[in-house]
Image 1 (cartoon, rainbow, N blue to C red):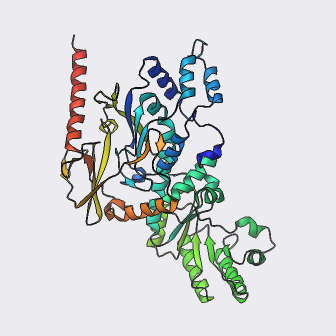
Image 2: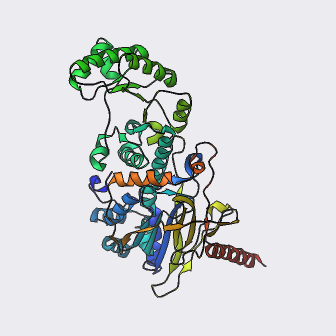
Image 3: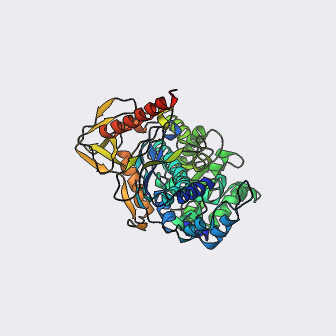
Length: 490
């Protein structure tokens, strides 16, 4: 949902600990120290090797509107601690009431294929502000990235066929449905059944009738004829209410009546049973009746794997209605994105102190310092990414992979992925049409090696740290281990 449609301040769309940390920073005199945070994810979803970045535009819209209104401040003033006394001092609440977002924000544009540990968003500015926006940014980016990735996988499985997003009825709430429709379109879906998403985002909308239409009439032929009379320019019939192939024959009969009146049968939809076998039977019936161009649409709990299987069985389906498993990301309902501090300094004239989050699980150890991502191309194809310190671009194509191996990316072109979105809290890159975002996704996915996109045993794209960043990270890890050893000494 575009955020203005909520009709109220969204400053409290956050976890309480963001506000308690902010209070602590304020009490310690740290609120205005400069900080850099990165939003990343640790593991590609759905057993794949990539994700499609999505939600950054929504995040920038949120940040551009960030302000605590009087009702927000009054609510926070009502909160109490374990002793029954106010949780926050009036001075801190006054600070929030005056808060104006002044951070710099850089984003990887929506629709861009991305990989683990790459910063999708970099927020640079006062520590208090940069901390407060952690939860809403993760909320806006995690889900949309997940759905856009799922949509890209489904659309790739569908090949030359079209995918329609049908998930609103099963989506997690109003905004879950709207966000899913937006992200699914970015990921490659051709249209949505969600009419409000069509209005808000300019996404094409599609739909005809449900089983209840057929059941409301005495027989199926009468139902199809009545629908054709009501909507002769939208006649695609759901044929599986009673007997699927018999329903196709009746749809074909109404198609002849449509043709006689100067209209045409758009096609039929299958929503149950053996979709492969039924689609082949339906195709024969339609072709024999003189409707070789009539579309066969399939729905019924589809995802990339079932579509891939059906096409391998020569199913005669060219349009796929994908609902529950797309809009809810049924097989992996969370991306697991994180937002970590990477550097901090007392003021603009001080050097950055790199910050690192350590873990016994290497995948959870964060990367320090402000970062940028350099994408390397060869002959128009993506060969790999290098995560490097912002302002210190790689001297060559060498990167250090997660396993510690040095890898050379041989390319003839390179671009930096993080692009300016806000400077001093002001938007510097206006929103683009969603069709342009979708086109970017399609174009960049075509530039990835096929083995990275494969649904079956996909291969990882080489993505690693610039040697200098890798060395800094190792030095910080070793320093932490040395400090711990010193602390443990008697």
